[in-house]
Length: 219
Image 1 (cartoon, rainbow, N blue to C red):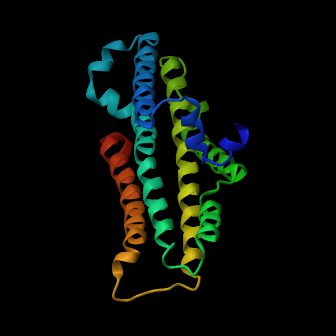
Image 2 (cartoon, rainbow, N blue to C red):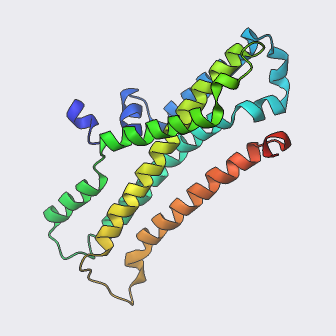
């Protein structure tokens, strides 16, 4: 089991431990974290704020980031695999040799995955500065925010690392001796879709966070 787990990216390994379908796990995580926010508001005697849209808009950016990453990662994986397989007909390699190359491209480096996740956590700690929070009137809310921000930035740091490693590894494939036909652009379409998909995913994440910002936080 341990050897099998190391063959998957960190996020995929964690989801597999639940033994549930990916999007079922995403829905459960969304519901549990939303309930934790309501519970934190109740413990801080701020339950009346739950009906206020600005309350959710202010405190759900971390949760939205988590859900967004969980929602788009299967698409990232699908596009990446299609881009890798597009090189099967472009590289002068036997099927077995290509399978080994493809496996090496997808093989995660667990140490650097953890470093990337911890770097994201360190960034949120330095930006959020939890020691400056108002721990008197919003004790449980602050604990919720710290936990959610830690998970969200850890996932974000890991995702950025995962994407950039994939870009570097696939770009090395493109520098090999390729069997190209300039009249057959369809062979390169999966690679183009992967590149465009990555751009849209980053753009979507940035846009989503801007929508969640309030005039106060933008100032």
